[in-house]
Length: 410
Image (cartoon, rainbow, N blue to C red; front, top):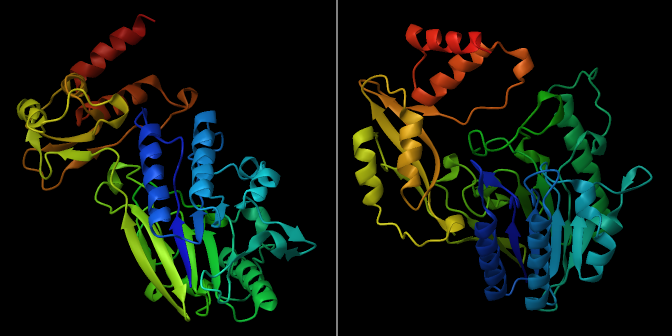
């Protein structure tokens, strides 16, 4: 029997609307270590997006290495495997490989090859069985960028996307090579990609395949695999009758993920069968919508925040995130300023609002504005866009007149 803790999408260094998540990550990873110890796992797999960006801070890197050291101290015989996701700086993640492998930590940032073949000495990792039985093997594959895939054949008469064909060819070759080495022994494959039929988090996960392609069919992974440990999608979910699994993120990384049941997956492989257990991780900080459903008039927001009964002495970096839902009966030019003032008077971390218009059937989200290249946009257009996002309606002639007067004074 072999027991594996499967996690993914840590996104160390992540911020939400400018709020740091470092304290939350510290608590969530401490909980992960305790789960690994309590389940006496034989291996820990982190399937990509360890970091949130290509240039992680020193503090984010320190948290990764402190967690790996903690796992090694508490589970001295466990195999630790970390693969890169699309957010990760693959080369930087691999840089301390020679040191980490001495500690039994396998970091796979890129696809290593011997000639044209995948380097199995790097990618195929044995996990001994605790009961003296046959070992399982993990084929540790990171996110596949264009350089990792075979050349795209766009002139082929075969149906479907050339990108999907290239991804299929890569996996077929890698899995066949692993099978040639280990025979029929249980094989686990990792990956960081989107699988067709899985549920995505709206706006939270990048579409990462080249060529405009996206999700890959589940039959990419042969039925004889013991388990497929995936990262990239933040909702914990299972496909292909339990054979393919996304562990999901450790806690909500956006308002979209607020309803998710976050945690890790413990996979137990024994006697030709794999049993999965989702183990929840307590949220380090609450993520609230006020009100829980519907919307409130602006005048009632203050009372609703008071009604939460929050601890005024809670440390700033563990205060609850709050998204406000406001119902408006007419123009409210100062809405954003009013909400900022209300939020500042309470022990919360304000992460935006939605607006519901009187008589409207659905609420209209007011998202965080994307960055603009100011040189490519007329200032009047930028003003109109910012005004609409701040107040929930387009500027009226009186507003644009004042803007034009201010602009003329430049």
